[in-house]
Length: 270
Image (cartoon, rainbow, N blue to C red; front, side, top):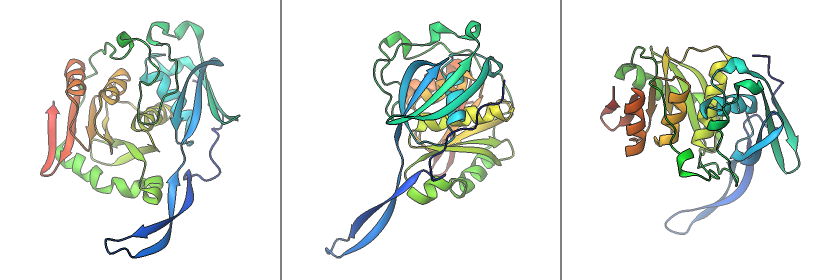
């Protein structure tokens, strides 16, 4: 893949802005405070300069976002088919243009979207029920993460989230070695955006998706499992239990799925 253009970043790398507020306690006492609020802006995703969809996202790591979205949605199968990514400011937001070999585009995996995608929804604007749940191939069977590795990564994850330490409002998606070391982390106001950014960063780094696992600070919704399985990630761990549909997709993809419970790690699918 050709080297991506330098991604456009928000003026602050932490993508937060201060807001004045008032803290109130149960007795009615109050005090002034300043709270950092995460940025949430429209990001127009384009395929070969043709508009595809608009997502609400945190304006950081946009080149990673574009690559991860294209791969995680199955628009292209191999990252080698992505020639480059250009992130740029446009009127009222940002645009990410993903240059893809025309012959490599899987148009059947490109559902038409009629409205913008909210930060909390990876499916907004998809017009057909048939486009929601995609057929996912089984992932390559690699070594599964141990509970010790999962708990080690989870214990140190918060310190590796610079945005969330500031605003306490964004999701983190981390790529973790089988030894429990966090190697890559991406953050976004939307959990699926954070995973897209992580997928893009992994492929930019030449990461083999069978050599570790993804750890996310969000609940486990089915689109997270679907995106991970689409790019060959064999193990996903989240802070809460999966939905029934997420587990069903993980079982079909033969994907390791676990959550962090009060007493340790809860494994739903080995």
